[in-house]
Image 1 (tube, rainbow, N blue to C red):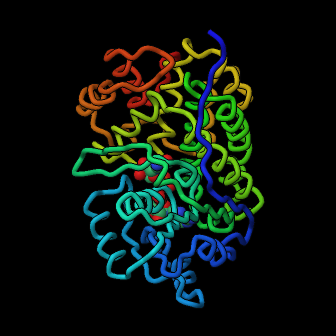
Image 2: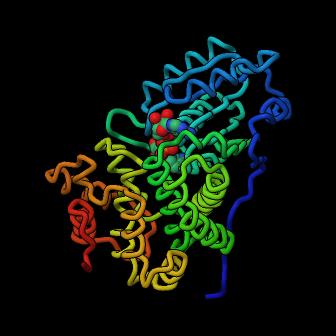
Length: 354
Ligand code: NAD
């Protein structure tokens, strides 16, 4: 078959620099916003205070209750605050949880979203939204939720603890890996993914060793930017599906679940995507991708098993059944037995080939 690819380019403005936050006022003005609602997680109070103090009252108020996987009740509470303040824009400051809440608000209100990311999750570059009602996480892609403006300021990541930085970085690496083997990807997604992967593999060990080195933080954040963009341009496979199920239904910690699972999904998919895995192995400087990723997790001091993260062995069957539901692309055909084996290996923290 002759080559074919298709993707959409959106009009988002991205500013990346130490001190990018200083451009917030002009970005809000460009979007004709005079009353932005700041949404964030509780951990981000000091930066939030600084922003609330911006002259001219451009930030009308704040909602600091963002939580992972965007619980529907939190969206309702934030919407109430949005309406009470008569806000005309949402400013999400934080990791994927804050940006995710921002997207849910934008889906409901239609106002523009400005994102100031402080982790490596990459949600700021995507049109992917998610909302969790009880233990049921719905997700979708909708261009309306994609941030219209993204301000990357590496200084804001200096406070992210080493272990959280490493796990978040592995989340970004997972975007790159799945974009590389996505059948419906594009050469642009592959370029972003390969470069993002290389940059993250080089910078994450340095970030863990010297978390206050803003230069290395900038390199890692640049990698996360590329990874988030790759995530937006390529459909994700088994790995993201499993993380979605484990996070949305079993409440597992998002970034660390990504880190633990990735080597096992890669081991499963390697026979069906040898070229992509060769790229991954090369970026890691390893003989092959799965063991290279497993070793990287260890080097970064991350947990290596789902057991350590608190999953119960009795949940494996249900998780495997949920992950096998629905249709999504994956390089290797999915079987119930195959998915169960991936989960079992990740639960035990032992690579299938070991
Ligand atoms: P998070 O946003 O939940 O942040 C984790 C913790 O770190 C929070 O307590 C937060 O307050 C704190 N934190 C964030 N930045 C900090 C900083 N610089 N310094 C100190 N503390 C900081 O975690 P996350 O991994 O960034 O995001 C996870 C969520 O994002 C999940 O719900 C996931 O599904 C979603 N996500 C969505 C997409 C998408 O494209 N839609 C992509 C990736 C992740």
